[in-house]
Length: 155
Image (tube, rainbow, N blue to C red; front, side):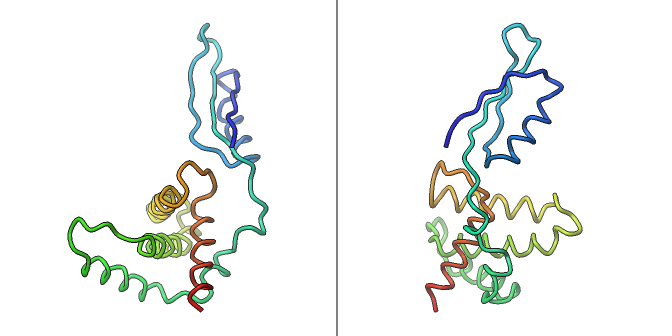
C-alpha cells in the first residue's frame, strides 16, 4: 500500500482520480487547495491491483450456494434466534454480504448504481474491515473469494 500526492489544475481532478482508480485499487481521494488557491492537491491511498485470476467470478463463487430465498430465510432465522446485543460471528456477516452481492448482481444490469449495489458494497466493506483492517481491495470481490473458500471448506 502507498500514498499518492498529485498537484493539478482543478479542472483535471476528476480525470486524474478516474485514471488512478483504473490503474490502482484506491481509497477515498482527499482534496485540498494549494497555498496559492490556484491548484488542487489530491491525496489517495492506493495499492496494486491483484491479478484477475486471484478473484473468482460470481458464477464460480456462488456455483454451489443455496438459493437466494434460502439464504434470506437463513439470515432472518439467524437474527431471530440471536439474543439482543449479541456479537454475531463471521459466518453471519460473510453469508449476509454474499447474499447482498448476489441480489446486487441481479439488479446491476438495470440499475448499476442503485440501492442494492450500495448495500452490497457496504456489507462487503464491513466484512473486509472485520477480517483485514486497512486492506484496500474491491470488497465485493473479497466477499466472493471468501464465500467460495467457505463453501470449499464445507465440502
